[in-house]
Length: 97
Length: 417
Image (cartoon, rainbow over all chains, first blue to last red; front, side, top):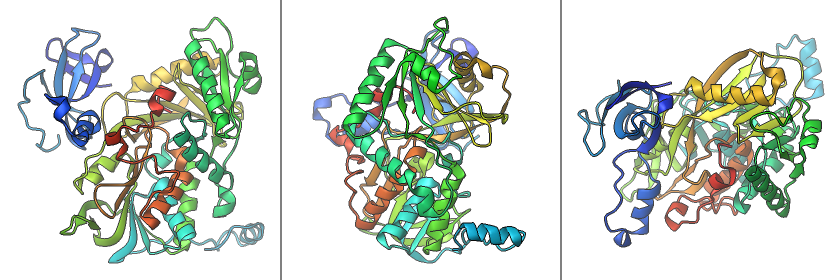
């Protein structure tokens, strides 16, 4: 089980959280103008990296707030957590932990 | 290839088993092949076997990062069934089940296919309605599936607790009698042996590091840890690592990779006659021929390549099993492990062409790929041999996520399957 650093509540066990999948997937501002290919990219295509991954989490059974996190998908270790709408301090291209 | 027969077993028994040969060679890679298959799991090896046996294409290499059958082929719970809801799914899984029925004879290798029946238990009104719909849909597709009452479930599988006092009482079940299990390692080994004997090179401990493309953008070969290998056609069958491999050719996939866990108990005498699946409470159970209970747990909620998952996931499954089968409450669990499964948005596989010429992909089998191994290899071999999909895998395009023609087995099954 992961130990997750909620920006609001501190370190809490994973069972209190839900993972919301890849972070920073922006909905096209004008969907009517988007091609089918781009729309399918938005809906379905994901980074799925073997390495550092930016993703959303919600502290469902705690403060109830969403936040973002960088996590290494090979070791499952969190690099950092940061607020929704913000940018991470480290970059997703940095080498694995 | 030396065939297994009654005579060869007797003569080797008298010879103290000194005369058995290696089942497949360990060749060095050639500079180029007609077809290079990336991934030496069951699906990749089956593809190579059918390329050689059905299409006469023997200048083929299977390139495997680790050892063959060491990924999800050796990590699954070996359940085989074909009772899927939609016509497209029924087509491919039933195609696979028919091949399973003759596989040991065809390969001259005992894959221990056992049609002991798969019973899917219903625990609420929605389950009952959904499973009955599956039964009717399956029958229209010529696939056996029948509805059992609670008492009939108990008669078919006596260990089930049908008390109405438990949290999720059994309200009946759907039984596919032709479904069952097989020996997972034997499937990889049997296909490897059959492919190798027809001239296919199985190259283990060789990791693909890149996919080379020419000026027109077409794929022409793979860069590996054992040097460059040219290929007229490349088939990527890399399961959980498919996104990583396809990224080497600049193709982004609609896939997410999750750890899926399984565990086995200490071996005990035969006490469990069939496979029982209970989607609502999330319990999957059968007994191997060795005597271990084989238990399938769920996926973790986050993308991961770690091949291990959270203990609370297996705990949840064991809670359900203890309630459903009280006789197992004091069983000791021996081992647990995880495999990395590649899941598509509609929980159906992707088998076919990619935007890159000469590059083909067979992926997205998610949490239920083992059962499809022969059918998947058979239709993917056709796709690689002819350049066009077989009619059975034609609906399972990568392009369906653009056109919207999804095969939404996620809604049909509601859970990992």
